[in-house]
Length: 307
Image (cartoon, rainbow, N blue to C red; front, top):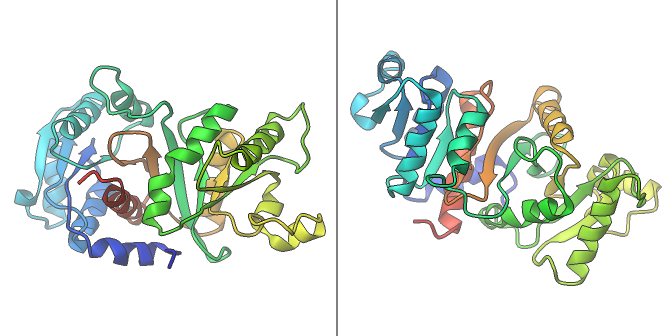
């Protein structure tokens, strides 16, 4: 059966062996708490924490955690902290990398470094997975952190990069909505053209394993009743998408934050296209959101033959 909530996903990873994670710039209370929650669940073990050693030690001791359960690699520079975390991946020490309390630009710069980075595909893209009472299953939004204005080629890669997630969620044929302002193709609105092209690519076998529909407006994508009113209710995606491919980063970012603030959504963020699952949370995210992302990464690692 498909996994439809973070709680169900948590139960599935609790049955897996714990693996190691490297956390870049880990000197933050919420970051350490998220790591501790993952340890308590048995999802990870012996994490590598990079950053200011004294600051990290103080946070750990204040939370009554045993220092011997952590390996700390010292630096006071955020970019160097990210580089140390990436090096741990390249050295085979860890199978997951996570963002701590540092700006995303430093984190991604280390991951994308041409000589020492861990990029493993043409496109690196972010996806945030959400759970909220107003929707009947988990829903993913991409790209909300990396690709400013994805081209048609980028959107194809964004979709295909997410395969390990759907495998982890036991979804055999994920449903993808390519979002735009309207459902009709308009040459002046590139998002509508992209939606049409991606849908046709499925028909011609250029994208396999997905059900894709587009262009779709948000209401049609998320509500079967809205789709019926617009006479689009005969299709498979309206009212039931697993992934929303957004027209640009701004729209994706705003939608995701709306889910969090107004939909009280649980969430977790992951980057695809690297050698290992890359956890990417906002600096304002709670320990629980960070735990959700680690749980996602652990499930993805299991299904990506990384272990």
